[in-house]
Length: 115
Image (cartoon, rainbow, N blue to C red; front, side):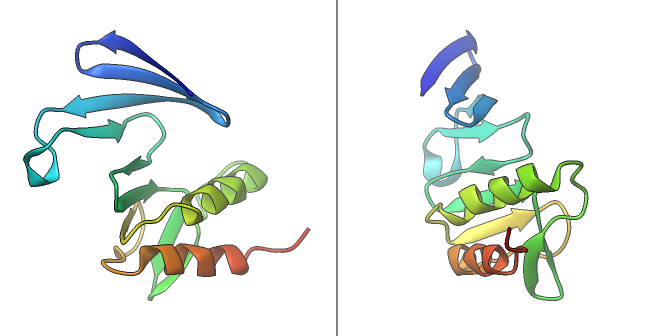
């Protein structure tokens, strides 16, 4: 992982699976600093995740989002999100999962087609 400061409040992070841009907020939840992924639709702190369009939660069922142009890549993103230890998840479509988000995301992975 490589982190490079682009501007005082903007960082570029290079990970094994891609590049993202992080926006530094002076006061995050609890009064500390927070970093938000701004170009991928995904943002997280130690115990929260915003899944953007990668994942949806409709009728209490967490699932792979339908607004993806590359299903294999979207499924991989879902698997990576499911590996995060998160309590809360917010989606681009559907209701948030306020507690037990890791379990909901893992359940969505179990519903993915095999192959």
